[in-house]
Image (cartoon, rainbow, N blue to C red; front, side, top):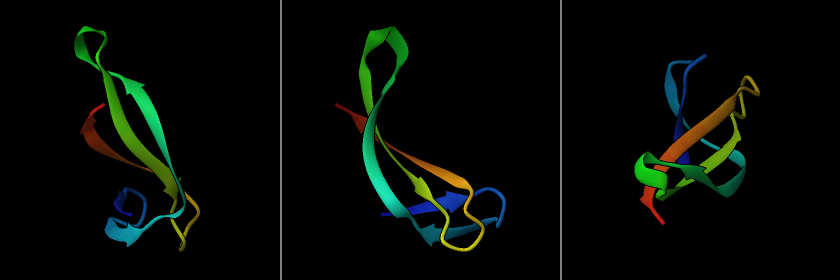
Length: 51
């Protein structure tokens, strides 16, 4: 899964990517992917849509 690294300011492929659910507006669960940047080890997120 590709995400944006804020520290590197570039799109990169996430390592250790896992799907999580986040709270959204109105209590609707939203899907997201979380992982680490392979270059700088910063935590990365990608919001995917409603569950």
